[in-house]
Length: 268
Ligand code: ATR
Image (tube, rainbow, N blue to C red; front, side):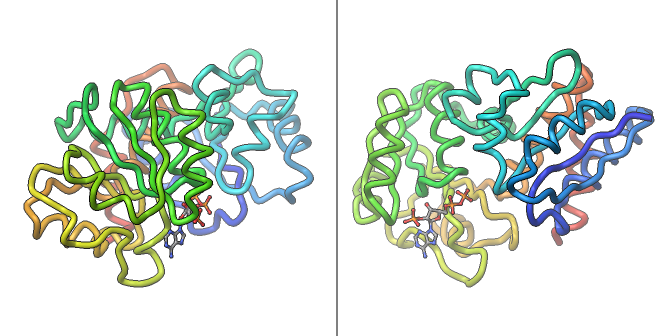
């Protein structure tokens, strides 16, 4: 039996185990997906131990993504190195680190027939999620603007992303006037029924994707739908980062529908 897992803290409410185990069942792979919560200072030992024990793969989440990218035990691919964060480690051969948050966001958009290449995209949020999404969009050929409450973080992120601009949140209504895509990569909408963007700034030519998935129906997405925008909820990014990880680990085409059903069944 193969063992996959998730390293993070906390991980007790993670939806990755049911999502991945639904895929193993569909593909008839004899595997389990388990969660681990190492102490922050024990990350290197955890990765080395996982490798020594023969784990097949690990996902990595908060607060370990940046440290996993720095780990001497992991050969990091180009995308993850540029983002500075690893969310997937493949233990086949030398452990390799990847970032499927970036590719997963692109695949979520592709699934909704959104053409990223040439699109004008506004990413709100310059934390870990915003960083991966901004890099993914720029790699996909979008023209990226990053806006953040703390404008200096947006400037710092924009400096790293080819062609991107960095702004404070006050710039968002103007940025959205000519935009094709808005992505919420802040935590706003999770704890309370709030939106990081004024409803008046939304319009029918936008696709609006939210990284928040608890709840699935955020205020931003409700207001976006009311404005006529196309909406893409947070479960899509969560799904496709997992789909991309599974495909890296197994080399097989992921059973997207089964994984999506396992995820959405637990989010409703
Ligand atoms: P993650 O890894 O999920 O991106 P993070 O690095 O803590 O988490 O980033 C959280 C993001 O949500 C940041 O962009 C943060 O803005 P700041 O950089 O100014 O802190 C944003 N955020 C959190 N609460 C917010 C709020 N009430 N209004 C606007 N932005 C908020």
